[in-house]
Image 1: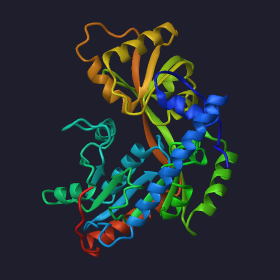
Image 2 (image 1 turned 180 degrees about the vertical axis):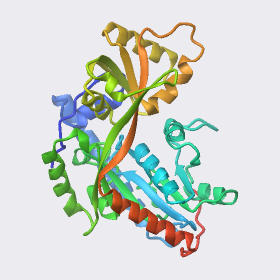
Image 3 (image 1 turned 60 degrees about the horizontal axis):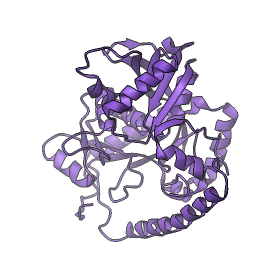
Length: 383
């Protein structure tokens, strides 16, 4: 089994993740690289043992909790970006269209005390008005919210491995560019769990399908089918750029990048996907810089990117919506305008195969829970 395409290592200012991927993918060669991979493989054995213990605990009495409303989990099997944020936004809009009262719940990785992390701020912009609570104890977050607010549908962001909270629909995203995490669990590969965990999924959504050939997409579906429970549907989604949002809030069509020399920079789990998306719009990426996922940008980082973009002859410095919410505070109050234009590529998820099926599943769940047919809530120690 191999990945859909070889990964390219971007230019990186502060991204050890890129160097790690070059190592585990086999791009980095030599005796030292081989020894490092062996060490990572030994660590992966310990990681799998911990996973086995965690899986066994899920069968203990009162370990798994259920809340008195429908829960939809959005997750993945690999680390890195598979499109969870656009998928959560899609489901929030769908829930609102079905007259549900949704709540988004996430762990809040990397958030400072009392502050939302970048995914939450991006969701706040994509689906304004939909409440979002961040708490490592997601059960307690839901219970506390429902004591003060109406809520009949919870969207659990990055919830596939959070098995202590019962869910009614488990949606697992598989990135068409990097679907199987090099076939190995962490830290030797990108898998958070073995591929056999896909049998827990109720729905599979292959994301970023627009960036692979039709033959590659068909082959990926064939590779997935024997790993799933019989009858598990495989949906297909595209990430569609909807606008280039400039620093002043103005919006341009994403096609405005066509034919331009641009610089691109990001700090996300799968930076290669962002680069390909920009190129897919017809832009010429003269410079591509990455930082590790959730990188806390400093003013010097942004100043360095702007200068590098200018030196590369780029007219525009493009980033992701997730990154832009961290860039904007750094730009506020600056006396001079940057030497290049800065814009964030706004992306929405579009289901091109299986949209009616997913809508039906969500509508059915909402109807059941709204009617009061739910399992009793159980007590469970906090995470």
